[in-house]
Length: 215
Image 1 (tube, one colour):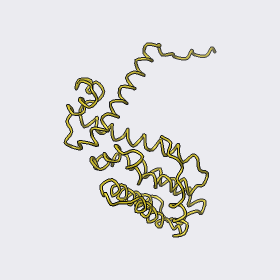
Image 2 (tube, rainbow, N blue to C red):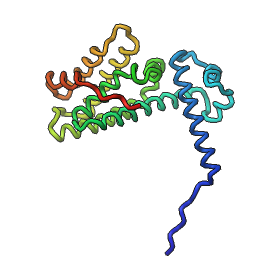
Image 3 (cartoon, rainbow, N blue to C red):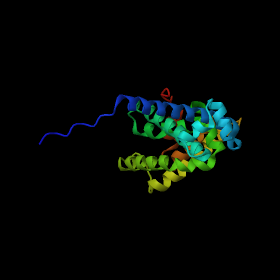
Image 4 (cartoon, rainbow, N blue to C red):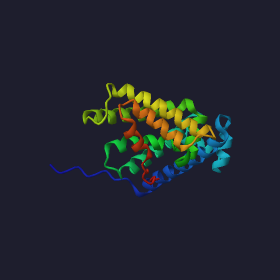
């Protein structure tokens, strides 16, 4: 029986789809900036002006302002998460692969400032992506427990508690002018104590040089 011919996309449709995607990403990046500046007081007109587009153009991509804001928050998270995953590939140590994302999370103010500020400005919306981080962390803890690298009775509960500590630490870094990176890494050590890592091991993991962040 002859193989069915692969379905091809006409070049003009392919170019149009690529252009739509580029415009959407440009709008999301611009929205990140204005949301970080104006917070919840932002209007759709503010967003359109900052992006230098018509309000009607925004509605071609999103049904309303809330949909755009939600998409912008998820876009920011996805960019951060992808960058972290690319960065930690430089390490072969399973515990470093656990701890480095934690240290980057509490440093979001420095690596992804607009996204970090929006985590505070729209705190209620981060519930949309934190469970994804928590699920990823739970699976990682299960693997480390199986390898006997950590002492953790319930990885799911540990992941939830760790995420709470890290979220508070990241928020403190963003909102508290007196907060230091040492404070952030101290919070990571608190999180590590929940999975049975010794103080000495936790200090070593949080004081080592982080790989250069891959944007």
